[in-house]
Image (cartoon, rainbow, N blue to C red; front, side, top):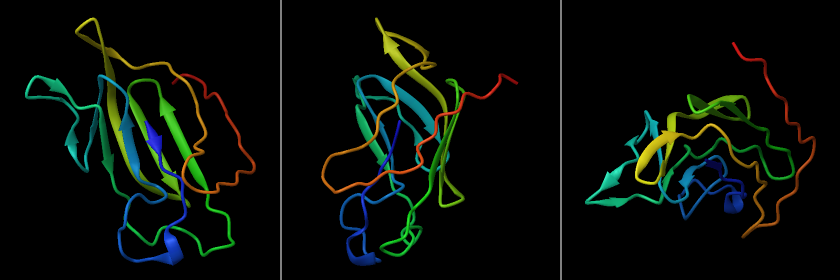
Length: 132
């Protein structure tokens, strides 16, 4: 699961590509449910490998100010994406295919994006929460 990072060009109100806060479900055989776009699923016998769900424009702070992103992961059950204090996406029931079987996606890597734009980070924190 990815939360896009990359400044919207010139504070544009027009969608021209991907924007900070957009949700991506990337990777072979990943499945998840999100209320905004329905279900990521096998379509026509082929697994959907990448899907994006846009975040409403205008959520970024003005250029020169820091945006705040928080991603809360509750195992395979739920991921909440918070952008500048506002929940912008929620994803539920994460699974991946292993030998043709759908199994919970309850572990994985944490990565920081660094691809098409200059991206600066500060105050990165990873906090393990106690189980409920």
